[in-house]
Amino acid sequence: LVSQIVLVQALIRRVPRPPGSGFGMGSSISCCTSRNYGCDMNNSVFGEDAFYREANWEEFYDCDEGDEDQDGLLKRAHEQVRLKMSKGMMVANYATFELHKRARKALELECMRASPSRLSAEPASPRLSPPRFNLSAALGSRCAWYGKTMQEWTGQEYPPTGEGPYWQRGDGKGLPVRHGPNYPKRRQKLESGSVMYSAISCDAIKGNSRIEDIMDRLVHLEDLPAASGPADRESDRGAGPHIAWTPHCKLPRILCINLMLPYETGLIPFRKDAGASFVAFFRIKPETVQEAMKSSPSPAVSQFLDFCQRPTGLPGGSRDNPDRSLASRLDPSKRNDVQSGCFKANAKCVNLEDVNVPTSLYDYNGKPCLITKSGYIIKAPNNEWVEIGIDVRFFNILVRKMLSSYRKLVPKTKVHFGFLVQGTEDHELPEALLCDLYIYGVNIMDDPWWIDDIDDDDDNKLVHVYVPSHANFNNVPATRLHATSSFQVVLRA
Image (spheres, rainbow, N blue to C red):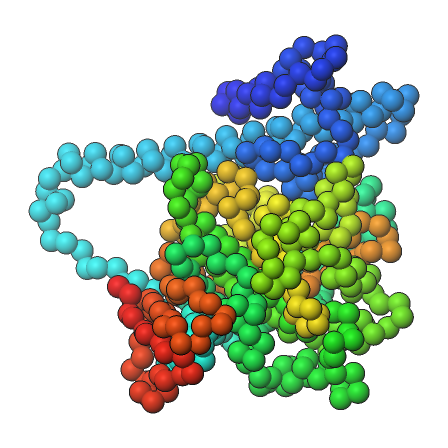
């Protein structure tokens, strides 16, 4: 309790006194009254205010009595105090958990030193690591890694904990989405019931630098698998030959999500961190095509239509283009959690009981996160595909620290990922997932394949693909290893 109080006081004191304020420096009232009510683009190391409002919305309510000016003052003061307490409590709980974990390790080490007999005793039988899938697919295309770094899980139940890496198609259910009426006041959420795009692949790759701009540079549309199953064939023809996808459709046929995870916390300057990229592809579903062609589409489809029509970056274009950044779409005069049209990501661990993390983090499991300065978007000129990238390096330091600290626990997790466009007003609700998928048993350090970046116009360039040591090519015919470009496959220890 003392540590939490100290942290909350430290958070309050770090806010500078506003010019002309009658309150003393460090006063929570001075902080609240000086803020623009819509200001959410803070640089707090513990995360944006919008995320905590979304996770603990019942703590933030409006005052209905008294003078209107006083109501605004009390509401802002109450909100900021609550936000600081939420952030401080989470940091304090995380710090307590880390201290306990390190104390246990130190105690175990001291016990080993004090009991030499344990060292001389017969060693226990080695613990077998979870089984990893073996690669048996051939390299027959320029993007040799596509579709081969992670295996699709098709079972009805979740795979055993620790097995992987697997990905599985989602059904659009199980993640919270906003419902009306009057969401800004009632904050009602229900579980999602549908999804607009169906997953067709997911891969884990890494290289010498951060990997961006996947489409038309590392993967082309012809590299994507042809429709194989009934659901895929139905999606490709758009639920019928008369409404097949065409460039006249305002929604993209293919959606690419590039999730970039760092290996370092970013606290040490000038340290290079290429990290890893998890690249997933999704194909439009037939009901989405039908809905998009209506004169009055559903709220979620209408939101995504507006989202896609806004300015974006272009394939091969400058990465400094402001239209490429999702942060450029924000209205600074509004709070982030009440802005419509923002892109959101949601991750929900479905087996928390198998993962040893602080219980204080359970409240934030499955809570959406707005993607602003960490996101980029590019779109094909003919509107056939859209790529959205999310770089966790731009998340707050607490997220990056926890990702680094709990990295060894990630292979035990089974995570449901979902992506959507935020709605606020009644005519924009209910929300619906754009796309979703499950990820099981991924080791973010060892499972990604190492690739060397390639140039689009250099067909004779040697492409290096480094395969993790748990993969093998025993069943790959030698003649299948030849492709239009030269490939060198190296088993990386």
